[in-house]
Every structure is written in C-alpha cells, then in structure tokens.
Amino acid sequence: MDIRFEQVDFTYQPNTPFEQRALFDLNLKIKNGSYTAIVGHTGSGKSTLLQHLNALVKPTKGTVTIGDRTIVPETNNKNLKPIRKKVGIVFQFPEAQLFEETVAKDIAFGPKNFGVSTEDAEKLAAEMLDLVGLDGSYLERSPFELSGGQMRRVAIAGVLAMEPEVLVLDEPTAGLDPQGRKEMMEMFQRLHEVRGMTIVLVTHLMDDVANYADHVIVLEQGQIVKSGTPQDVFHDLEWLKEKQLGVPTAASFAEKLIAKGITFEQLPLTAETLAEDLIKGLKKAGEDL
Image 1 (cartoon, rainbow, N blue to C red):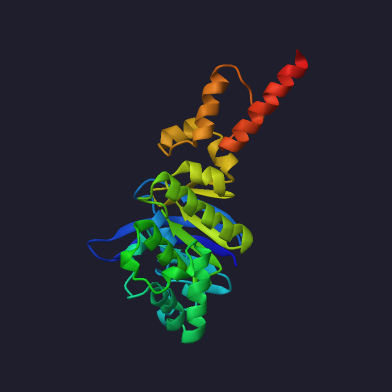
Image 2 (cartoon, rainbow, N blue to C red):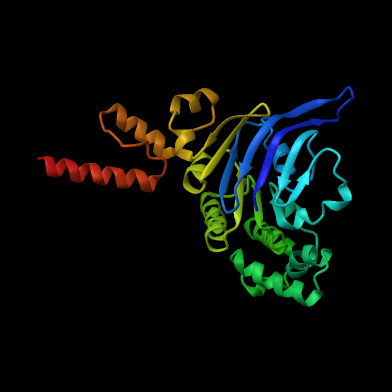
C-alpha cells in the first residue's frame, strides 16, 4: 500500500489569531514495502506529517492518498476509521497509553474495538506478544508491573494486533538504554523483512537511519529540503553539519580516515560497510606490495 502526498499544506487553527502553518507544499511517496526515515529538527513538521499518514489530521490543502483512499480537506471524518487499521502509529513513550488490568486485555483492546471476536483477539494478543519478544507468561500479568522496556513492547504489540500494513514509529527508542534500543530496532527490522511491513521511522538518530532505512526525507520548517537513499542524503557531510542534523558514526570516522589519505569508492555509512571497505583496502595494499 503506497502513501502519497500531493501539494499538501497544513495549518493549525486556520482563520484564527493562533493560525500556524506547519507544512508547505509537500510532495512525497512512501512506497509499499519500503523503510522510510523522516528526519529534521524539532519544529520541522515531522509530527504533523506523521499524523497525516493515518488521517489523524486532514490536509488544509492538497491530497493525501493512503492505498485506495484519497484524503482532501473536505473528506468526511466518519469514513476514516478503516485507515487507522491499515496504518498503525507507535507514538513516543507508547507505554503511557497502557490502561487495561492485564497485558492480554490491553493488546486485545484494539482488535475488539474493530469487531474481532474475543477468542480471536486473545489469539492475536498471544501471537503479537511473541512477535515483540515476550512469552505467554506475561499475558495475565498487569502491564504496570513490567519494566519500562517490557511495557513498551506490550504497547507495540497492541498496535501490531491491528495487523497494519504500515507501521509508523515516532522516536521508538526514546529513553531506552543502548542494548534496549538495539533490540527494539532489530525487532522492527524483522517485521520489515519477514512480514514485508512498510516502516516509517521518525528519528534524530542518524545511525538508525543509515543502518535500517532505504529512503530518507529531510524536513526543515515544514518543507522537504532533501530526499533520497541514505547514500544520497549523507554523502554531503558539510551540508549535514550546516543543517546540524548529525552524521552517522561510521561516516564521521571515515571522514577522519579520508583526511589521512585513505580512499573509499563511496562514503561508508555503517560500521559493517566501513569494516568491509577497510579490509578490501588492506588486501589491495598487500597485493600491490
């Protein structure tokens, strides 16, 4: 299921003294099966764009197409509920949204709200809990007895229980330690690879963009200022520094090596690629001796 924005503007509280324009003439496409990262500073429009992805808000101007549904300013809000089953959003600190007395009930709440039987919703709860790396022993526990990382996994399982085609992640590893962040990102990568799920990642961590995304959209003051593959976006390190966006760790290290005379066919963005390139360089140097 593709998502397309065509000449999309969005203004908060239009025609009031508090009017604030957040998006300006956005044109973009999130392809089915892609892993798209959206980056930009606070206030760049990331969260506003994100809310358009499952019609939590409608464009003030322009068209958002989600699969076979077209959303325009005049679209009736009553007909948008099915879209929210197809596009699941994991907001920052989703564990704050847990409220049921057991993990099973919390995960099953969404499907039951969409008409799934109690029996099927319970099966979904068990399946999705396993998918996020927690076993069946957690089902009857209170979510409020769990660790922060476990609570987050339960909240994500609740979104996955809706069986969305697109999973939108808003800073999904915020507040986690490095190991927890790594495990969380690897879980999303498995969903992408094994289930073919389209992933949209909103993040300020450029290493995550370099390691996982196949497409990047850079927002600044509500406008797209650059888009393309990670290699397209990250090859110009000076531009990234000028925009204060951060640089992938491997690319930053490679830049120091380039200053010392080491050459690369193209700038390595991940630790794995950097290591491979250095090994190739050493082998070539050995052959030339």
